[in-house]
Amino acid sequence: MSKKIIIIGTRGSQLALVQSRWVQQTLQQACPDLHTELLTIQTQGDIILDTALSKIGDKGLFTREIENALLNRRIDLAVHSLKDLPTVSPPGLRIAAIPPRQDPADVLLSKDHLPLAQLPAAAVVLTSSLRRRAQLLHHRPDLQVLDIRGNVTTRIRKWQEGPAQGMVMAAAGLNRLQLQNHITERLDPMQFLPACGQGALALQIRQNDPDLAARLQTLDDHAARATTTAERTLLAALQGGCQIPIGAHAQLENGRLSLKAMIADVRGICYITAEDTGAIDQPEDLGKRLADQLIEQGAQKILDEIKNQ
Image 1 (cartoon, rainbow, N blue to C red):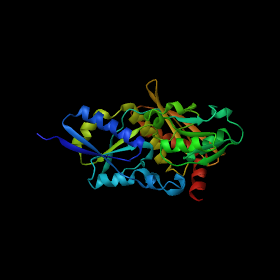
Image 2 (cartoon, rainbow, N blue to C red):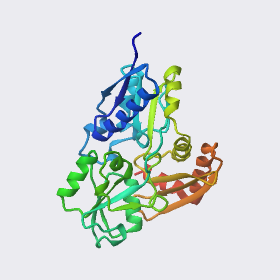
Image 3 (cartoon, rainbow, N blue to C red):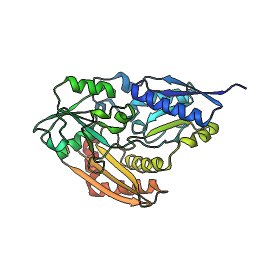
Image 4 (cartoon, rainbow, N blue to C red):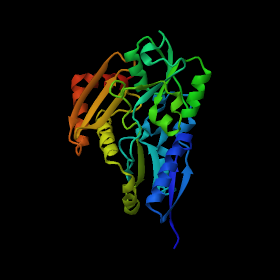
């Protein structure tokens, strides 16, 4: 009897392939009757590399072409970095599993191995994220924060070859690529809040594929789903995208789900935080409640100013 073939869609970067091969191997171990193949798909975010992410468009930059391939049945399963995925799936698609989450924190790479607090005055620090820019300037208003684009290894090479003192990246990407030796400082995710869903993968399928959905349940992680759902519900409630500096960090503590979030203007001057706890099985309620708290503290003014620019 021939094995059922599952085509897995992924971006072609080194990190995306490492992530997708892990999914491929884990799924085949759980379901020996499957045969899986990888199909690399180039996204708009992979093509446009000379413009800051915040100036290009919405969060579908790294996912839209892969989602289209799923809808058009070129692939059966899409592997995304969850933080790249819009909070609302296109009609006909669903997130079937969120595997165990990698470290959600950001990290600093520094040429002189100096932590963020000890970087020289007016030091140049590179980042591809408005959220990171706002928090860097909030903690160190003297820094010069400049844009950098490219995949993980490209950004590291550009930083090493250029004059910038430091660069901020996601810990998860460096960990998955075994590049931890470049890390100078892990930035405490309760003080330097990560992107919503950072460090997690999303396994997306067609809505009408119950067989594959059932098979993927072996890869779904309860803690990862609860924490990322709280974070992404907050993001959706604030209607946030890559043009708005929003960060959040959820974790399971003493049988409860805790969530801390921030929103700031792009200069990190107006900087609002809130935190709360809720039931582990009600992450959506916690995300919505915390979004309301941020709005009550003045987040709407930041949202309106950024959207009207």
